[in-house]
Length: 438
Image 1: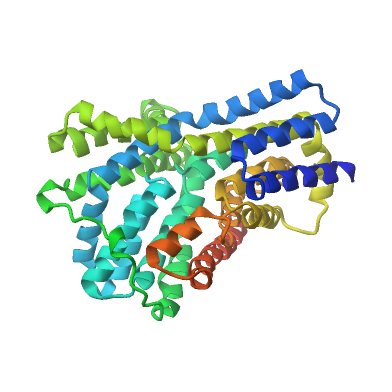
Image 2: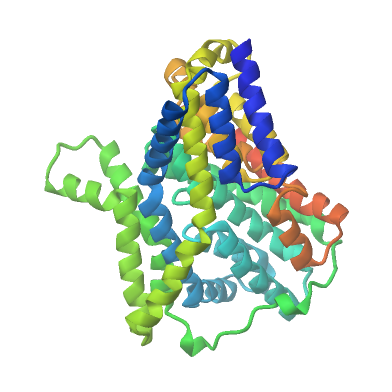
């Protein structure tokens, strides 16, 4: 009982430090880690050793994927590849299905782009298209952002799914495969189907947010644009397919395993994209490298949050809290997938950050995987779905959507918050359906 109370105190303190006192999540994690260790009778030196181990284990495993992924996303955005994909899909689908074209654009470019980058890239594009075709911006934009949200919460190489897969010892390729299976119906439900109720929101977005048109001759070709977005997925997916076939180890299987490693796949994709989206567009290496270096600065806060969550997980392990909680949590009349989703959802509503909610949940429920036998890939997806539940006023994305689309707080809750909730619940249902078959 005391162990459970201590865990609740740690989580509550984390919520208060982040939401009420407004401390940076990394600082909040450090304070909670030290306090939890002291309350469990640990000395200062072992506490700091646990924190350092937790920081190193998590960040060391993810640094390459996240930093190289940020560079790739920046290159896709700055080169005009996302605009090229969008314009090509709009031409393919026609004005009647323009919403589906934007949803597919968001899904494709959302795979390599970090959420914040994807948001500020896609929303101006949506507003520009809405203005050009005289359509309600919310009706066009929310489905695209649903696709972006799903890729952010469910699919590697995004920070939270990658970190969760690492903490749950889940296969990255299979997590991506299952994630795509769940992502597609989730996007359709939370996007085009839900958007039927959005045509009444006819507010004109602020013109300042409309994107500047890039001359078509300055855009890269469609093939290199799609290749930059999809190559990491293809390489990781190829390794998973080959591994699932149970082939005898040979030079081919060894090769696919090397190029399918998430870090190697991201690096290969970045190097190819530097050539196809940069050098072939007559840009010098110096010009290309400047923005790529800046992109890493943009994700430094995400890295710190992930590191802090890793430190808390290690403290929970080293103090014995995680071990002591396995039996009472396992005895709760809840399926482990539902439990992971529920804890993540509560933290999401309390804290606002999907990344913090997901990774904090991982530190609590990770020991359940071994004892319950649940598929770790599905635990990643259930936790990710929970971490997207009901975005509201404590989430920066809530306010970004409100301002870009010129809505009131009440209207933003009815549109944005409702969409995020549909994504979360639909994702959970998809996880349970998959769990039935695998």
